[in-house]
Image (cartoon, rainbow, N blue to C red; front, side, top):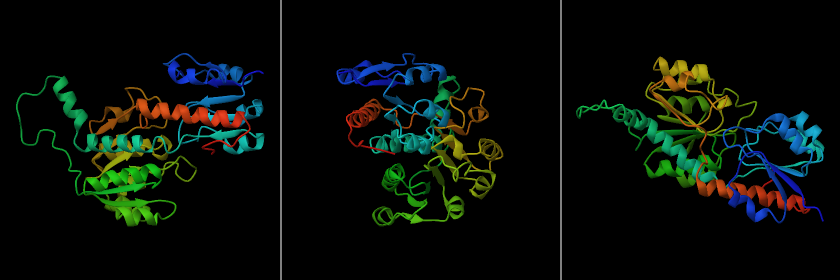
Length: 320
């Protein structure tokens, strides 16, 4: 019996793939420093039963119509805005993602980014690296307190809740805005539901954890930044499309807000000459929210569990 062929669109460590080699005929893009070209992805997909792909791959309507024979597209991410889910449904192709397994890890990174931005960690480290430290001074790289400040979380999903738990440990007041109220979070973490504009005006830290949708596109725009306090710090660990980057740059440069920490951008990867990278009051990261060895391994395994289920006529573990 012929084994189902699975194409993996980015290089994954061999030891993670080997346990599934007896079950599947696995092919994989081998270059680590660049995504698979569109023409090769199309060519490989025509011979595949399933894909294990990343956010960097555009699985749009044209792609799905050309590859309607696919049984499953397993996205190694929580988000799936790179996939035309409606078209996949029309073609009878199962789409899965990897929720839950990366929640705590991404919350860790979110809070690490918050702390690094507030306490100017990167600036201070660079200062020593450039051999500029000559003596101690009382306001040398004085940042902002985190403890007992107010955090405003926009998007109270799994990751938002995990971030709120960490904020609680710092004695922070927690406000949130979400499409629906989270009464359990309000009770257990004493979080307060707020209108979006009110949250912007009252928060010391504004954290974006919303999905990328039509409604959230450039949610954080010029008007939103104008509503924030001059001492506020903005963090985006969701999707680049939810921020108007020109408006954010202006708000930072004019000191409408104090600082920003960013793990995601509209166009990725960004280059060193990106305007936001040039600002000293911005900490930038290369989209590493869930990037720990343990969590990425769990994500790969969830993808293969979904692929295995669908290829054997069963329901997947985490369907979109």
